[in-house]
Structure formats: structure tokens, C-alpha cells
Length: 341
Image (cartoon, rainbow, N blue to C red; front, side, top):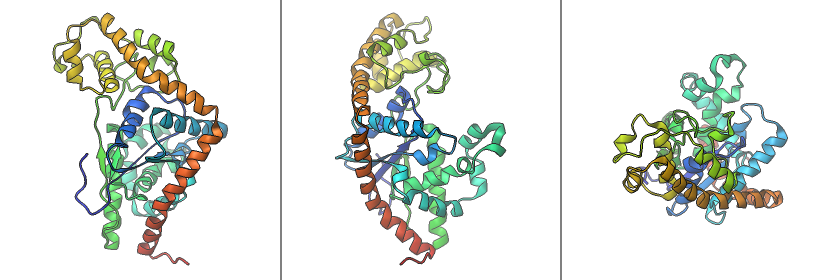
């Protein structure tokens, strides 16, 4: 991990929206990396960003369940509350408070150029919520209220980290301070972008109407095996080199998944399975996926049967998060000129 050239204490922050339906894409693209970062020696904070979730309508009961399910997913995958701070965003009001200040720092033009705004609002921009338009400023606050120096993200979120840096730079320039760090995105891993099992050109998504297009983190061993066996492939064997996967999106996706689950490079997987037909490779992937994922599914189910314990852990994490966030917000208020008692 590359440390920024600054005097800021290295700190990792990242969050996922509790919108329900955790998939293999969420696990390999985010949560597995979060777990690995616990061993980096850098303080790690992981969050259920429920304030972001309500930028589009959420059924209240579903939001409550989805927040707990995401927390269960974090915990079952290996996030250790003794080594990481785990909490939901709305329990730490400093996020929203700094978010308002950043609303006043960020420019309308910056927000209008955000790719995800264009994708999510589409032709209905006039009917989209103000929160959806402005949420990248809140995302910047999520990160900077902890002076986080590193954020593990997928390629599709890199633009938001660039905006976070722009907001930090403008704040520092406008007030003549060196208060907020220039946060670095951490983009790495063989499967940071997991694709659909039915269409290798599309990202794996819980919103896909076909449940066979994705592996849900709540799937049992039989469901995992069935979905991999029926995953779309092509008739060619695996190539001798990674370059041979070009223009073979389904093959590349399954190799990526194998590499990420086994903590190997794509090159190593190809070297071990070169020339194999999918009739041979898929059973190997089934065995690996069931071995890695079925225990997580079982532990998630156990945790979801004890929501009070999940709530206790999130409350404890929120208190720890506030110990970091409160003095940073108070100093921000002082810099801006807010009168405090």
C-alpha cells in the first residue's frame, strides 16, 4: 500500500450501501479486501453508509434489515471488531455535519460531471433527490471526517476519490490550511469487478432479474455449485496465457473469480489450468467457491438470528468512530469560523 507523502497518520476508511442482497461481487470487490487490510498495521474503519442508501426511496423495515445483513456479512467474512471499527453511518452525526460544509465547498459543475449521477438519474434528473445529486460531497465527508489516507475502491468509484481530493484541496486553499489529507484510492486485486455469470460484459448485480446471474452471499453450498456449473462459458479451452482471454469475457470472469478466491494471480491460475476445458475447470471452481463461501453464508444466518448482538457491536463501533471524528469536525468548525461554546 502506497502511503501519501504527508504528515497524516495512515488510516483506511470504506463503506458499502445497505441496499440488500450482498453478492460475490461485493465480497471479492470490497469486503475480502477490507478483511485483508486488517493485517496491514493501519487503522481500519468500515461503514454501512445508510445515509447514502436513502438518496433513493427505501422501505424503512427493509433498510433496517439490510443494514444488519450487511453488518453480518462484514463480520462473517472476517471483519474483527477488535481490530477494525465497524459502524453504520447514521449513528455518527459528524458525517452529515461535515457533509454540509463540503456542500458549500463543492461546486455544482463538479457534481454535474459525476458519472454515477448521470447513470443513476438518467433522463429523470428533475425527479431525482437533491441527496442523490450531492451525495459525493457526503462521501468526501465520510472519508475526511477521519482524515482517512487510503480508501479501497473499485474502478467505478475512483472518480469519487478524485472529487474528495478536489474538495480537500479547495478547503485547504480557501482557508489557508493543510488540514485535510489528499486521500489515495487503493485499487487492486484480481476480481475488483466481478461480472454476471450469464453475461460477462455486465457487472454482477443484485438488481439483475435472473438469480442465476449472481452468487448471493446467503446462498448455500448447493446453490453456489448449481450457479457455477450453469455459468455461461464458450467452447474453447483455457488458453496458455492471460492474453488469450481477450474477447472471452465469460472465461475471463470465471478465471478472475478463481484467482480472487484462491489469493492467486490470474497468471498463476492460467498456468495451472492451461488447456483445461470448462467441464474440468468449473468443478474445481465449485469446490473452491463452496469451501470459501459456504461458511460465510452459515455464519451470516447465525448472526441474523441475533439482531441485538449486531446492534450492540454497531453501537460500540459508532462510539469509537466518534472519538476520531468529533475533534476533526470541531477543528473544521474553528477553521471555518463557527462559534462553539
